[in-house]
Length: 187
Image (cartoon, rainbow, N blue to C red):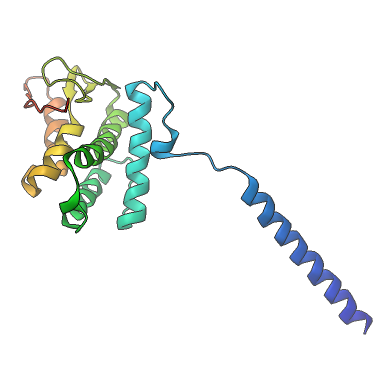
């Protein structure tokens, strides 16, 4: 009888510790990530870092795609954009919604480039326009936000994975000039 009583006491003790741990853990605030973590008046680099984190989270939650900032993961970003375009919700998205998604995934693609080759983000570009978020790297500018916007608007012919491969290989060859077309994002 005493053995059953001791087991019961141990069981109560274990349950109490588990309940307390769950309660304490629920009271610890979770650090914001992604868009929620962007501080007010953030510079372009900080903003793009957090937007890229949002792309990682969205890709995992919505499409079970793992994006790890490796060059190969840009192909998964293309897959996420393709799946987004196939979603019934996509048809209901406004141009503002499409620009927001393009900015999130463009930030991810740009962060892959920046982490591999260095570089800095800006909000505006004098030729391409305001709100184009160029990534300055290897003495050139790339516009992954524009790539993703065109992908969402034009479909698979503007494949982001192919553009990434092309622009990275061409940007590393200093003898080749790369130009971007202007897209008005000031609306």
